Length: 68
Image (tube, rainbow, N blue to C red; front, side, top):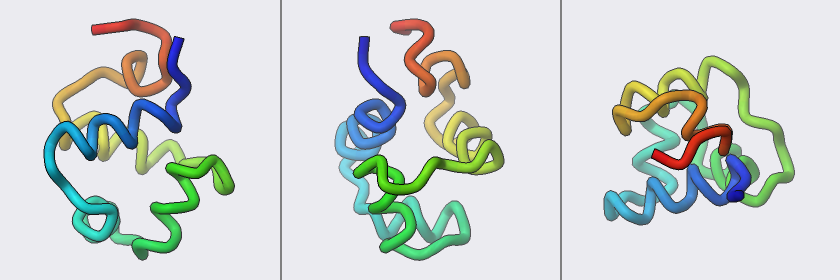
């Protein structure tokens, strides 16, 4: 099972987006978003919710609790 770290990176790359583009959407910096993808910072719930809406996936998917 993938971790949320791998999943958010895969979603971004599968949609041909840069870290900066996602960081701008979340209202944060590219450096902070990069730390989420590296697992150096935990991603806040508000950002998980925003990513769910952006990618049109469930929180369970991003958190690695379901595969679809």
